[in-house]
Figure (cartoon, rainbow, N blue to C red):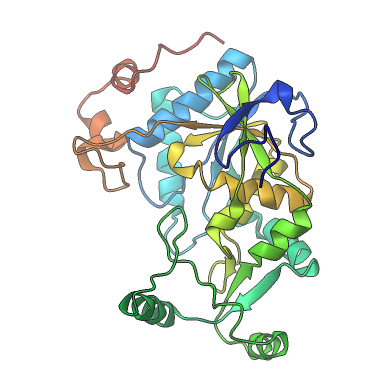
Length: 324
């Protein structure tokens, strides 16, 4: 049972009353934020909103607004999309303050972080194919004992680590069998050495922050790397935020729950923890989250229709560009 006054999981507390929470209070630093799209398609209104929220916060704080191209998936990400993204950002009035960081140029950084976690005994290879996983999930459902699911609705796989001995996994990995590398979540949480939490800015991204208790266990043994993509979103994002000196991570509310995994990795890797702010999502007329195939909501279509940057801001409910 949590001690009296401790936050329930997901419940915010004010920062001022939490000075004793180890490793969670961020030191004052110059404001640095980032917009981090994947160049696997053109930007839509949701991207424009996130970029402008980041840009505007940096301008209000006299800070730095950066762009990162999250292009670890080399089969889907293309240079022409990265160029188009920068062109769209210039059009909406949110060009970055420095050349973008491209994840594909920093695979060695992610490999080093992964090796550190492996050296701590927190990573293991899992050999189940997608077809095997689908059959296992179906069998559990048919037996009337469906698997628990993570916050994204993906079934958790408690059997993945238990089916093979360490020696058997090592032999299969050495033989080059296809596998993914997963974080041993229970061991990782134990190694973190105490409660995890993050600071969530309320209202404006640079506004007062409240403490949110993190429960990374809800995600199970997350994938940290694949054979075809030798890193993952979770691993890359914490390495990149530290490398770029990000003090405030401003992103969509669909990533709120994933922050629990990120603060765990930050603790394990000894990385600084930024303040977080998860903004509202821009949705289509049916209330669905916008996608890269957004059609009329894509920036290319809006620009072709003559929509101006000022009109775009009004449509998104944003104030005029802040003075620099």
